[in-house]
Image (cartoon, rainbow, N blue to C red; front, side, top):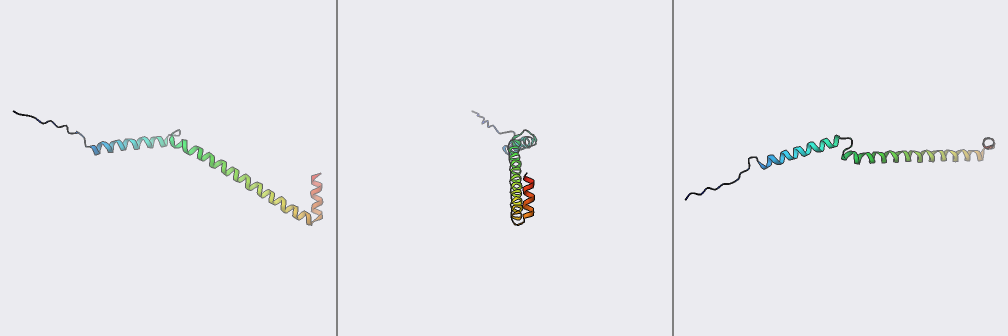
Length: 93
């Protein structure tokens, strides 16, 4: 009696299959990163907008502080100089 053993051997190496799948995944990720509406844009755009808002707010705060400091210095000088105080009073009306 003759019996045959039939074993299924893959026609392609499993490492090659994994490498091809990794390459395809890498290409898809690279394409998504270049897409302006891709997942990276969903993260970067709000961060960029928040950074711009923060910079604008800090600039306003620094400018307001600077102007308040200038006003305080001018008032200190006017308290000591009657001519400057008279000029300030005339400017106020």
